[in-house]
Length: 441
Image 1 (cartoon, rainbow, N blue to C red):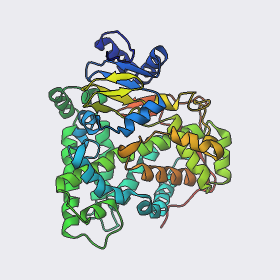
Image 2: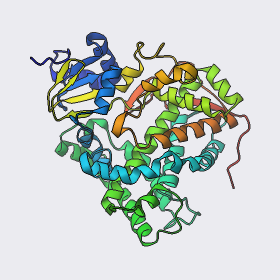
Image 3: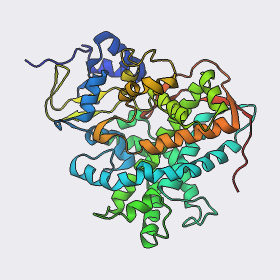
Image 4: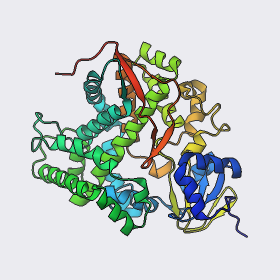
């Protein structure tokens, strides 16, 4: 006889209301009531098994028997933005083909040389920060992360840097964040006809067409005149050996990196400073030696452990699977809940504390095994290396040049914004010059 995990017997509508009002708190409440593996029913989703146990989550992520799909449950949320030819929304052979073509451009050897460019972008942004009055760090980090993606992934350059045509880079930079803000989460979980009407009403569809006009023009120009190449991802993708991607496929992958890549990295950086400014010991250590790569790596890892940007890594079950003695039927969803695992005291001692030292010395091995902000297995986030390099570099530049302080010592609350968990107040901080940088030439 098959046995499902325990869970609430409340109607799906009531559970959906609870989840909508408090997405984070409701999950933690169910974990306390039913244990680390439980069922949940929402009116807009198939029945769910939520997994907050480390070993069970690693099993689901690894999926040794091919019982789950990853792209399928993401399509309704992400397809309006990234399209149907994205690593986010595909499964099977097509996902494998795209991954083979994109992975070399985002491996460590390919991106290690980007550090100086990221530092230059960060220095330009830092030089413009207001002195002595509060400002939202999250917005500043979004500008940095977006510029990194435009420069290093798209190979685009600001006006005055031989952009084709002049101003396209600036238009992309202005449009990308505005487009994200036009996507309310409530619209994405609605049935497609309702969703599409809502997205049209918010102006999203119009702005997406404008974005596509810019992106297809860039792809067309780069195919016609590849130029000498700058090592950016788009150049490498358009000149890759093997089965070439169509313009539509290139567009979808580049939008994925442009939109998902810049916002998730910006949120991670916002949380890094939110935590550092409330952990003086760690912040002082960075300010004393902002080039300590080992500690910078530990800070970045601890940030996305204690404040993971993504809530979960959903899978659609296509063949019955067994998880820790429970049977999950085909057609259900299984959700490794990263936040629950990272907050499990059986996995991380004093899990709510921001303690980068847990990723140093003898503790590091066990901590890394339980570290799942980018998933695990074959579907490990392809942009993880670039995200972590950007975080380390930007944190280092801020620590080297600027003193920051939090005007309110209380922690900022996590808030679900679209599909990322962000600081509710945008990491409000006050900057004072330390060795303020001048914008490079």
